[in-house]
Amino acid sequence: MSLEKMIALHPDVGADPNEALAKAARHAMLCALMCTSCADACIAEAMNMRQCVRTCLDCADICAATARLATRRTGENVAVLRTMLEACIRACERCAEECGQHEAEHCRLCATMCRECAEDCRAALSSVQ
Image 1: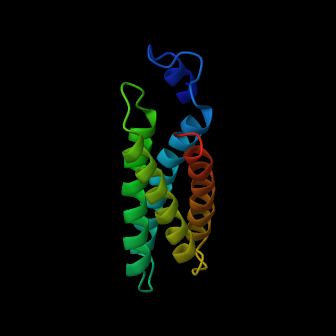
Image 2: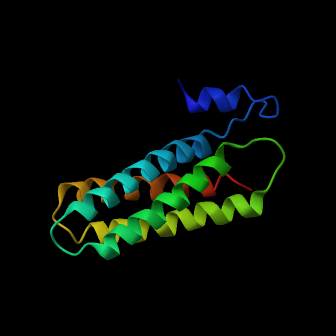
Image 3: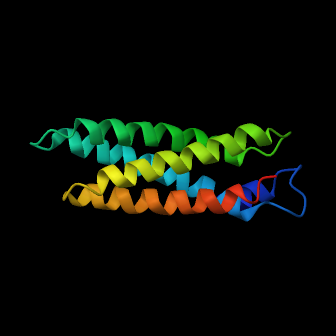
């Protein structure tokens, strides 16, 4: 299944499905899952990972909300969508920074996903006018 195809089938989309926004939505959804998984793994670590857990869970929630808003095509709410994309960029950058401080492989994977998600949201931001 393809998120891009689903969005393209929406009656209000027409000829412009905004592929950059669809890509950002897909990566935000994946990032939410990666951050949730990383937070869970951090809880099981022997060292104190409280800040990493908090940062990952905050990022997961923001990414999940951003993904949901980015897939909607009925009507418009450009200001809110732009605000969510900006928040997702900030949350992902902060999470990548936090996870990047740790040697655990799950943190390294999470940091990489967060950087990719931030990059995609940045690209989508310019397409939402």
